[in-house]
Length: 133
Image (cartoon, rainbow, N blue to C red; front, side, top):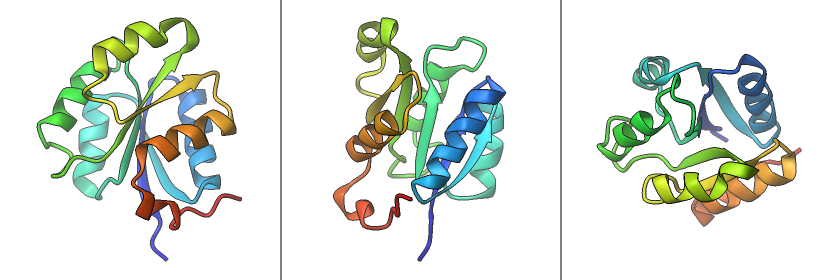
């Protein structure tokens, strides 16, 4: 069985590490980049099946990353994108990126929130490929 490849783009090392670990528990081969340039470099090395990114971080270039995904830079068709948003920013984030994100991961990070976002983002045929531990 081939694992789906997930790219986590987050400038906070702790959050990036935690997300990659949680995705691994959900059956993904997860890699992490700190910003859009790092994401582009990693995506060019390996195919990406899913992107999880902080869409509100100006240092990260979250909206710029979403624009690049929409333009096919990460493949065609583009991989699904899960946008990480804090509870207080959900409404603003969802309005600004509704067209660009497939699903949203409400923070704080919990396995329940991640699984809900994965279920919203991935096509039904991918659900059988995930083995949640």
